[in-house]
Image: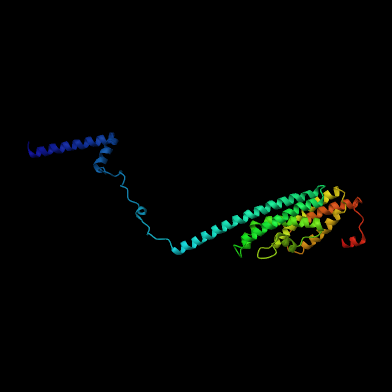
Length: 289
């Protein structure tokens, strides 16, 4: 075959193949799309494979070694020693205070018999026996506090409420004996706290007097029931003077409830008075009242 004829034959074959491909692409385009993509975009091997793990920078970091400060250690060691000593001292204080509370409850329970038909001497005798015990316990407490001079008010809260209850009991006992007020110096002497740094705090003394006034309304009612119609007048005179003295102090009303006890005693005295049961007062007693 001649070269010209062979070239013409090849050209004709190529035109036929191109026409067949165009016809197939028009009728079935989806079949050729993957092939064209495969021909145009060769596959990327390893594109979706996970990347090898990298070491964390934080794991490779090592903080510089540093020894604790000797000054800091010495300071906190001193704090630890002080706190341990304070805790031990407070445990000893609370042990003595627990005995004071127990003796005070026994004395208060003995004073409750004053509301019953029991001789006053027997009631006061049982209460006074506990006062001597309480005085000895306060002496023990003073010995413990000598180990921490100058720190009275640091531990004062450990026996504050117990001391207030003791003062209330002492003041009521004193009134039953004398009909007058237990003074601050007398209370200190009864408890053995009149010397040295360990003394009877003024606020504890005043609070104890307020607690003592709570006993009078019940006492007055029971005494009137027993036929003692002059008791309301005596108690009213005492509470009136005491309340007037408290009003001289700059204290809050919610702290002092004595005025309510005074009002209840006034009501009892009023009832006895209007019924004609109160004894006739002399002119001197009326002037004093």
